[in-house]
Image (tube, rainbow, N blue to C red; front, side, top):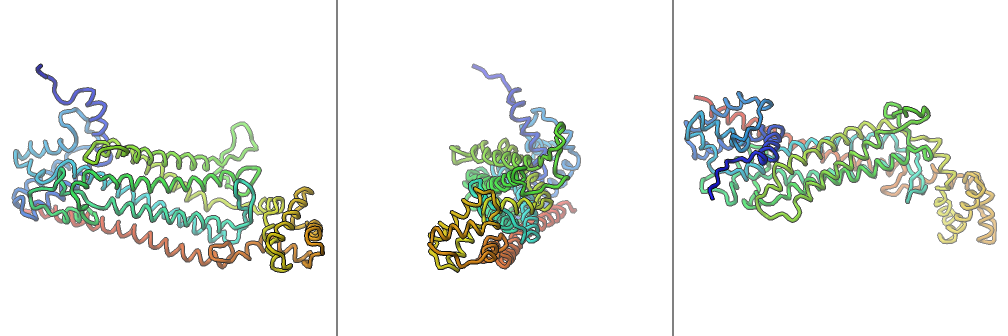
Length: 494
């Protein structure tokens, strides 16, 4: 049977090749230009190509890049993809010497280098956004160091704390997430160029120079791993996923705190939408957008990681154009979350009246009463716990604020211990005041002012370390861009 068909099949062209071509135009054409220039510079420096040959290719590349209008390009199927379009242009203008640019490289090492260059750009921008959020959380935590809140466990009022203490817990999580993201980006920063298809090349390529010219930290050593080990993808998207999984929990608390029945968090009018029919409604809709955008980002990260599941340990399309381009949407939605939350957190405030009312109504300072009985009355904690529990049940039953419950306390103490308490009413009021509760929790990590101030210093140091790592990556890439530009310009000279 004679096969008279020609590549590409029209359906394959429209469903696979054309969308991939559009993706390269949007995300990778610039990076392909960087790789072409860097590879040409390296081929000349190690003597694989003569200076005259390098000059001719350099001038032709520069002309092609200047003349091509990326936005106007439409995929026709004449060339398999953008790479072959550029190579065809080189050969058309230079003849056979135009094909020399591809000496000692493959689409395999080029593709993963393209993807890594894009992920470094997007990953560093995401890390910068995360650092901006951490800075906003830290600034707000310092401002709200002494602002009382009701802390909840299992959806129920538990103990008093401060808004600064609560935000500090999230700062620690975000800083750990930032460290995980930073470590994942270090894996992205290992350059595949020089691996060629699988086993490097018989030509004396300088892999370290390629990595340097493209702004990578160093080459990824094993050439098979350069085209097969996709842990730079799975590691990065796993780290990104955790950021937004954790932020979603913070956002869920904000939704609960801002509910009318709780009323602990006040969202300003600039971040509230009013019902079209119910004039009394203040809808903190940004919280919902933060929640679903966080979930969308988590889902997009899962999509990328799960696509790698049960794939062969080799070069494969499963880790390349389609999934890479789909994964970039995670950066888009993630950056929207970071920007909105960075604005949202400092703009909100705590409703002190509702906090006070809920504190009294739910007896959330009762633990400190039990502790006081241990210290001042000589009771065991279990004895003190029983007295405090009876006191709480009595005041809640009578709908009485705990601060007004000395009579109920004295009765509970007499019933449990067979004697009157030595603690006077004034001491009782001090013991059950939320300010006293917080002030006594001055151990490391607690909500008391001195403990929080120490924590803020620690967070500031960790934040500086994270910012420094990101800045170092930016400087290295900026230096590489200047080096590549200078080296390529030298090839153009007569």
